[in-house]
Image (tube, rainbow, N blue to C red):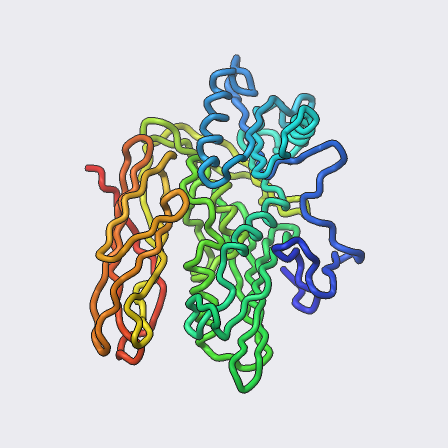
Length: 438
């Protein structure tokens, strides 16, 4: 785990060093995660797949490899326009044997020259620690963590009111989002800021440690969250930060990926707030890979979940095809409060799906005004505020359909009120959807 007396590990979302300069346990400045050797451009995400069947090419036959590469390209293009996908046969002479490797570069060189392609191929050929007997392995580059943190941070409102809602002149200021990779198996997310309300300005930091291990074929997550404040800020700030990290798209920028889907990991705790590490692992190291015809191939993880300064690794083997059982979580607020005199009140919701195969289509319904974001997995809904002292229920629903015509649907009731109206505690919830297929 992280030594709380040491400087916070990781890097600011803009790539700068943390205050005081983070150092590694052995002394000296911390290297930037995922820095590439000369002439080599390591992929942001690398997947190796081996066909172990006798008489079959371990690197997959030509058409099979093309199909996998095409599926990966389709899966990432909506969330990472311009991403480059490359494949090749790697591992000759290595203990684990040959396998097909698929690399994703979310920000390829522009323009992409022949030299750039050669550097990518050299990066794809680098070992990612796949062990003998493992027929599938995943590697997430440390650089990718920084880039997704930067992407999330740049899209996030950094001024909040006392209830955690975005407000241009709000008293709560968010100043930094940092991510760190802590060997042997921990990913760290830190959010820093201050509360400018009198009587005294109060600085704070929220740190989330997420430690993974392999148990009975699954990736199991143990999560610890700490709130550090300079003075007594109160429960309001704690709730505001938890809701901020849970509801906003900071840590969930990858909805709609086919091969890499949002999954619910088994957890030794039941925290409401997740970090960058857990969000990325859940999306890029799935418990199963969706295939055509409403089926999937489960992934059983073996060995160790490994965190190094360069990135994160896990491997296992792919099982036989089984039917998919799609589900969905509709995540967002269960209550919204308008200020006095405010004619509308706004909330944000997202649909998180399991066992669906891209491309996905989203059909949102509401009695409010719906604004769809990105690939369609997230919406902002603007409701008409009730009259002062009044309370009414709004509604948000979504139906998600995948490429095999599998469907899940869910609906959320939202309590709408005005400041000063008695009501229950404000909270964020998940609504589990259900398959809409007969």
